[in-house]
Image 1: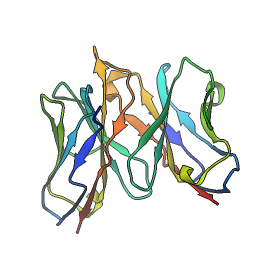
Image 2: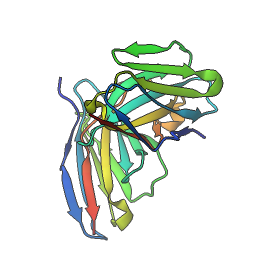
Image 3: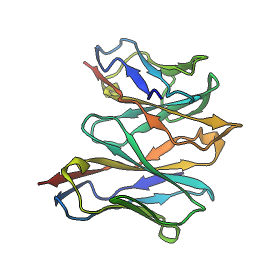
Image 4: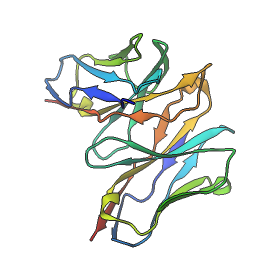
Length: 117
Length: 116
């Protein structure tokens, strides 16, 4: 069975602060994929990143960075110098490489981030 | 490049009725997945269609059914609506080939269904 845990339900920061969103996953698959999506109040899920299980390199994209630690089954997301526009719900998701699962995304419950001026 | 579109945006139905939600895939994508997102929860996988056939299903009863058309657009049908079916229904498209789906899923804006 696959499971994604986002222990932080809500986080509130002041603009320009750095913030890290935690994601811990469980899977029996040796090959899998991890994702982060952003859901602004409009409701549409916006793809942010995909990480393959065989690629443990961390990634940076502008103010966003991701730390993949296979040893601790974690895939954390850091926003540097947060801005009000970063306010949204962020979801971590796990997808199996097993075709029997239909390549479904298994989502965590999300972390609601509020950035205030 | 056209993104994923869904219709209608909002819908109100009465318990016991039937509903059809529609989704148009992003240009070049051949796989469609449907998710149900209850308030305050993460999306839950309903099913996925590839080449007009169901390619995987989550833990949803048979009254949730779907179709994929030759142009890769899709429908989600829900029969005998229950109050707990009230949710945001999200459609996502992706690219798959040779049985292997390596592409990201791109989501539409969703349909907000309210069952009274």
